[in-house]
Length: 350
View 1 (cartoon, rainbow, N blue to C red):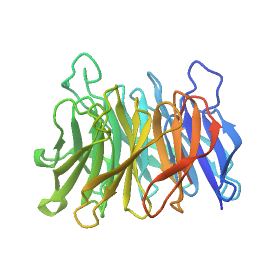
View 2 (view 1 turned 30 degrees about the vertical axis):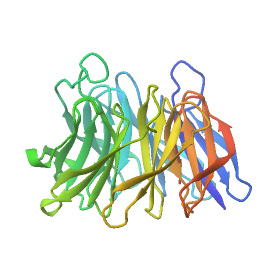
View 3 (view 1 turned 60 degrees about the vertical axis):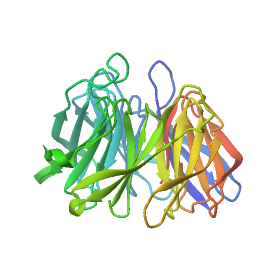
């Protein structure tokens, strides 16, 4: 099977191209670089649809989102243009199921915004911008102010959830006409213990369950809906680290296997991928193992559609690693292949 793979990276202070187009041959277990693209600066996070690819520009100021048309046959990208945005250090982008809108997280300026997409895939306008305010628990380090890290739309499209690492909160916004945002009632907000630092999250079971990595606390939190799905309550928290690990670490990305049985999360510092098995009924997690990332700083990873491989983007060591996985146990086998990719921060299979 041949898969089209796209990776995003940092370009500041280097002559590296930002977006990598890669071919994955699962029969040969090989990665092959096809092309690179440099129309946007620091495309550290990508959002890929069947027809288009969108990239953030993680800049210190003057944010920007770029759009590309995808050739379905060979995966080649055609640049469609960029949309200037307010905010700084944009780090996450989410295209909504309607294909007409998106939401993005500005880590540096602590803001979230939504935008609209034209029928031809190009970017139309910014629809809403909400700036967070306040100071977190660790006032002199990572929580001296708001740091928005991820956005996710509810299954019914009526609410947008926004994780703020700096303020230890997952904000809940009501989504209105043309992707406008209004802060929801207090009981809809998700507040974490002080100093945990919420980063990325995913929904399961049509939004009944929410799984979230706490970057600073190196944990995964599990939440379940109540009150007809309008609020979430914590039902579990588990460490991403073995009990005997004493070094520094920050938790990063998380993804479920396509069959929904297993959850993986990445550790930067320990440089590992932790494996959990999710109970089919309760959704609670049980730790099943921890595997090396074959590189430094596994910022992001993904699982192939056939559930047989996992790709890891190691930012500091600058390599994309291919590992086979056991679909029955969730365990990862030894590294099958790797591809150099300077300052890589994102990888996905289209």
